[in-house]
Amino acid sequence: MKRRQSQRPTDSLRPRLALGSTLLLAAACLLAACDPGSNSQPAALDVSQPEGWDDELALRIAQDLNPDPNVLEIALEAKLADLEFLPGTKTTAWTYNGSVPGPLIRARVGDRVIVHFKNRLPEATTIHWHGLRVPNDMDGAPGMTQDPIESGGDFRYEFTVKDAGTYWYHPHIDSSAQVGRGLYGPIVVEDPNDPKEFGDELVLVLSDIGLAESGELLPADSGGKFGDLFGREGAVLLVNGKIRPRLKVRAGKQQRWRIINAARARYFNIRLRDHRFVRLGGDNGLAARSSDVYSVLVTPGERADLVFTPADEPGAETMLLWLPPDRGYGSQFARPREEMLLIETVDLPPVTPAAIPAQLRDVEPLAIGSAIERSMDLTITLGNNDVVMGINGKPHWQAEVIEAHIGETHVWRIINNSDFAHPFHLHGYFFQVLDAARVPEWKDTVNVPSKSELAIAIRFDERPGMWMYHCHILDHAEAGMMGHLHVLP
Ligand code: C2O
Ligand code: CU
Image (cartoon, rainbow, N blue to C red; front, side, top):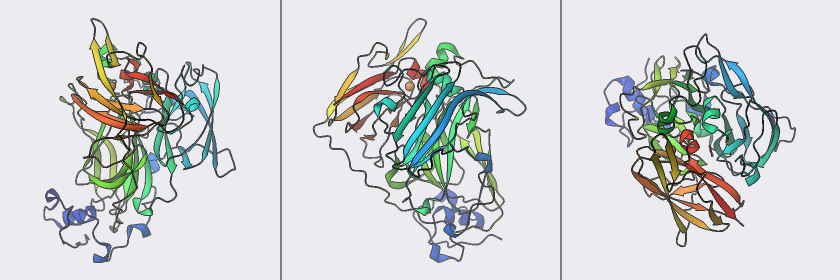
């Protein structure tokens, strides 16, 4: 029996949802977070998620070896492991602790994190803690902040996690190849004060992998120069290392999705029919305000923090879809949508969703009155036989190191006249995108669409040292679209 909800129109009731059936009205009402006082459903906060709701998506959690509640001490080993991605086949993937993705590192804001890292790969590697404000010598930039960790070698990483939010870790040597083979893992830094209304947490690591029919990994340089130019997307789409896993939900019962794009080149443009999401923020946790979004674009390296309110009728099954995103030249042409995640709404009566606060956090705009300006042109040069990517026309191996001083605020204009979109990432510091149309938030990775430009403001407030910035299409970074920034005391 579908309960007929209050039909009082609300601001967020979109016409395409008002199709007349009681079911759709109920769904629309759920979407619009109807006033909990207007009906007798149980409140979402009082009921739990369906039994086994996230079983197929469960991530391994890095085990804490330290009894001190404020210290998270873990062992991380990079090694080859045989995994089954395509049913009935074997893939020898590159893994952290034997799984793809690697274990979830879950800490609380302010915790000390110690990582005993062992490299048991056949090649040198390092770990970069994407988005975390770590000390410079913990940043994982080979030859800059540390020596490569050779095959058989060990390294101790140690830092304090200063900011709540969703982050991730990955290698910074031959990164397109190493990430493409499976080396990436999620990090969640919890803020114990986050409202319960955000819902039960689900970490979703999105990626892809290039596999032969036999299950073997395709060569890391598949596609040659075209692979460099377009960025290598594996044809097999993965959510938490699985193909099209199942998620169980209960109508009205909210979930907080922490989404990480760990693919080496693929953009994720996510949509769920007849649903909107409430976006809470992204790279550095909460944005200033929550906002409604109908499709969610997460470019490589970026994160999205969303509330998902299931609004299908009990018993329904639906697919979370990947839609071809526009990342420039030919990237959408003749590409079909793909299925990412099967969402099963269990056969239990709907519950009344909790209201999500509108104001989430104070994000003070950086004062840019006396900022130092710099422009960075993301460039692609096609030679006879090669593709050179760079910043201001120079690949990173020819570029000069740029400088900043502690205490300075910079405004960087990032210009993209190339035929491809580029997700621009800065190590070590969060920035603000100078665009009044966006909800204010702190970011570390931002998409710069083809034939466009944007400006970011950065304050270099602490932690002098050598930091990197680069395109997070890792094939582009390797082909030269990367640079070094020396922050001087
Ligand atoms: Cu996730 Cu240098 O990047
Ligand atoms: Cu790029």
